[in-house]
Amino acid sequence: MLEYINLNKQELEELDPHKTIFLMALSPIEAHGPHLPLGTDVIVAEELQKRYAQELKKEYPNYTLIRIPSTYMGSDTVPAFGSLSFPAPALKKVLLSLGKSLANKGFRYLFLSDNHGGPRHHLAIEIASRKLWKKHGFYLINPFSLVFKKMVQHDKYFMDKTGLKAGKTGDDEDAHAGTNETSLMLAIAPDKVSDDYREVPPSTPPPPSRPILLLSRFLGLFSTQTSKDLKHLANVVGWINDPNMKSYMGTPAFATEEAGEAMLKARVDIAMQLFRDAIAGKEVSIDPMLWRMKFLHILPE
Image (tube, rainbow, N blue to C red; front, top):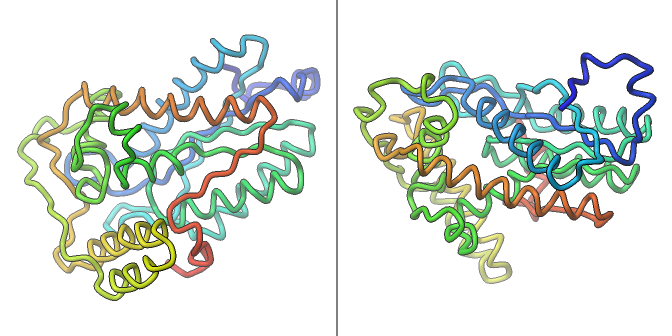
């Protein structure tokens, strides 16, 4: 995989734009409990990027793969000391500008690797993706917008693929720096996981936000998916508004390297399905959670 920053103008101009794929890790820096580094999401995203590149090179050996430097940016980070958050509209503008810059040079593909589950984060990325497709025929694809939805809502295919159980897949009971993310880090960078992670006590979900939960029940009369999405939002809001909130959710002590590796393989498999569709010229659109309420992305954090 080539490094964008190491190319000169002539080398870039000599590339076949229709057979060049750009890859970029995109995730924020944020608190991940007392046992994982602030850069956990970026570390995981960069590992996924490497794995995406390996699979793409196997299937499309005639394509050139180029790494754009990681972007440490994301919306809806955990409101804890150490987290750095960017409003969703700012993230959207950055991605629109980046995609437009590449599209104006004739390029067609920017595949993102991501490990951040903020609701407005995914909305901003998908809004930018659809605008770039509509205006430039440019593919900006973030597989995690689809994967995260499958994790949280216990998609049967995804659960079977990982072999993992509810409560250990990055779902609402394991939302942040719990079993799933600790497992990912044990598989990717065990030296960056605190030695005493097994001694970190479980963090259990507080009651969900009642107003949002009631809204989810009402809207469930019209849309099952919107109801599911709002139940997730109710759990997230209940957690971050809890006066005793911890900067992690789940049970780090249950984490294993094997579970992390199973999650990585399943995520790469889903990503490759999306990438194949793009390279085949098909329109690729993802409905992240809360997509029918995408106006939420403009609300201030």
